[in-house]
Length: 369
Image (tube, rainbow, N blue to C red):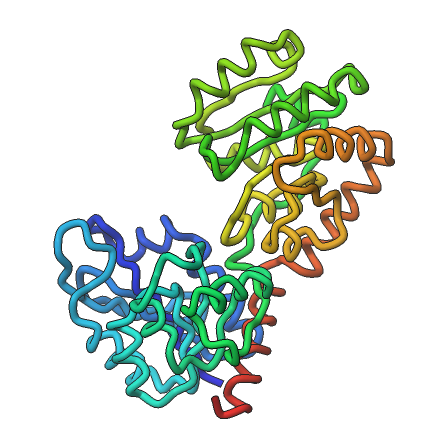
């Protein structure tokens, strides 16, 4: 089976193709995992110049497409389609739901097309998205339930097969918790980590409310927060300053190098995130890989990722978050950590994602869709 994994979003700056793979490390990792699972993989990537090479058995073809300033996609979708035709692929895997012009060119090849969601919002694409998704063989979301809002909005046909597969995985791995705490300075009984952007969609204020509610029952509790975009920082700081409990227990770390996030996750007992909606949950995947038990909002992608591990909590319910934290803090934390790591290895590793994709490709090719 031969698959072309197609990236239509091009980098905004002129960099070497090798640098793009370094900047987007999950792109080559997913391609290599799919190759190991038994498919012959060609990655076709919109780019500012032509380039071609092979890495880990995967053929990479970078296709020059001129673009207007500020545009995330190229202007000549026929070049991507020609590269797909020349790859000899029997199925196309397109990343992203919103590329009507490019999809029209790819459909002319007469091959089955799997489209994978990457954090699109239902109801925002209108006729353009309907055109992009017309005639596809299948669509993949982190959680299959994420498809229904797109169907309800008239952007996705109700008879399109829907598949569940994580957007990506991580190379993070479990390490010694005490050593990680010594390196990072993280402490707490329990130590809780929050990672995300300080924006309304991530709902950090609900987690702060939950920590304040749980703190009397957990006198050693500390919350550590990593973030980059920070429009809610003034509100978060004001909320912390208004509470002696939060002032004592909450640590705003700000932006951290990605490599240090692995250490922080290995130092943490729990990972908390109260997102109101997400396309996936990369930080949650990283947390499970390191053994941090998740306490996260009960939304479709988090249900698909966390499975039976940790706790799923109603969106915006600070008391339920607090109760879940108190309950789990009283359990055997070493056993909880093993459960998280085992779940990641079974369901979320790169090899698992690659095998899942290969199974989807085989089903769509076999169905002749």
